Amino acid sequence: MQEYERKQLLERVEREGATVGADIPETITVQGEEIDLRTFVFEIKRRETVPPGERERVEQAKRNLRRERVERLEAIEEGEISREEGEELASGIIGIDRALNALENLGPTDLEREQQAKQAADTKRWMSFLKKALGQEDGAGARRGR
Image 1 (cartoon, rainbow, N blue to C red):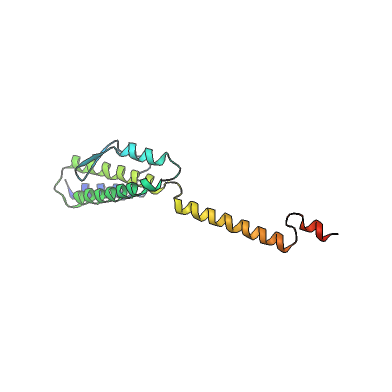
Image 2: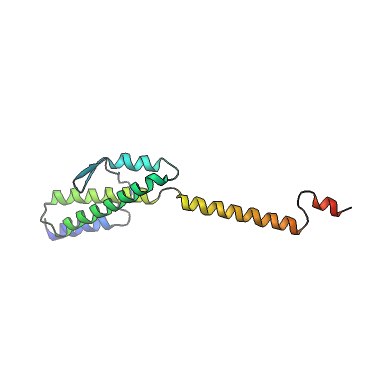
């Protein structure tokens, strides 16, 4: 592969909008193990939140995908590869990026749900305090009017 071709491929995978319109690969080989990546991502994204038991599995998948991305990028940067191999690696990197984007943008986690519940409880306590302070709690105002 010529040096200018290598630079073009690297520029393509680092471009901000590279994943726009890109598909998540059906399968991908990560560290010698073939993964049904598209099925995994859609299975996780289908849920509103990631259940606690699945969270570690998702985090491990993201770490593995990032590691694989770095390895493929290094192969383009430094490897003795053909133009075709470089194209294949670049397409794979873009697919990995697409999958990582999908996994990073999952719905709210349990921590976020806990924070929302705490906020709602705080608001309820505050409103209860205000009603007591203003004498409007459960008919208290009617008793005062007598």
